[in-house]
Length: 430
Figure 1 (cartoon, rainbow, N blue to C red):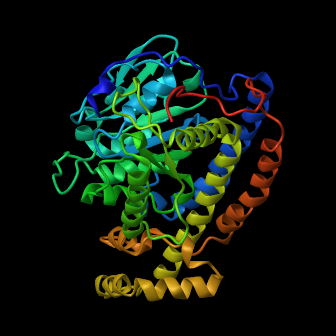
Figure 2: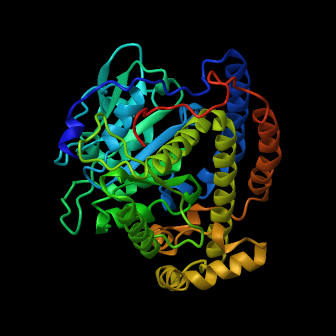
């Protein structure tokens, strides 16, 4: 970040979102959450356990706290792209242990949450707390937990969603040995996040190997991802057009999707730099309002998003069960199991196609072949029973149960405090 970032000045306006404290919302939201918790524990989790879904996937079993958790915003980007400044601008203050500078400053994952008093909860304590939705993080080991913390501070904004700040990624190939699997951690948070903001600096568009791996970890969650081109007023109008084109070209090489990602052109500062350009101010203000609108919609759509995630998980667990059952049928009863497993592993693309055709499943629902192949190493298929039609039928019923939750969550849960207008969280900046 530029040196001007280091001056923490107050942002004068309020970032107002529909409050999770609204009594009518809380009552209906809790009803939806109760339904989803029941659906997961009785219709999805038994299927996951029967076919060891979490062994093949990065998805840890969901607890009631995970399902009931507030919406989450995940920030990813190279160092000094403005991730911490973005959070401080929303909160109108610094959160505990935050630091801003021109050098890489955020060296850990930080979950910024609401609490009446300011405090910092270390990673080991946060990962075992029943009051926090981070229980699954202990699987990444002590090296990660020592680089994870929960920073709590009183904030109206944080009453509505949690923000996760991530370590800045070094540019080029100057990667550090973090001591833990950074990409897998990103994948864990992305699965639980409601919105993923991928931040770039107008002067820093190169995509390093680690950033590329992090973007690939977002596969399957493309609908959550928004790209933020920050510090857009540090270049003039003509240069901004070229920067935008260069960014889209760079993203096109690493994001293998026909859909174009939404890119917000903004400049988020705690104090305006003297060398900022104002020739695109109207555009930047409009883009800023669109970004804020996205954030405002999070609590409004929280219930529907949770329904969507439960339905998606049920669908993937069902596909996984059918794959495992199919592979089990191909295994010999007594001799040659190791050789047969090796052959099945090598022929996974063909086996996936057979399962897809047999059960009329879209290939887009199938897991990553390499990850599934890793999960097969040392697998003993005799521990799995034959295809359990009862469990599959229960997972199919998730759609019906979830449709009722969608109908409930589609009612008017919220009352906008700002009469439906996009709130200005970064006044004076585009």
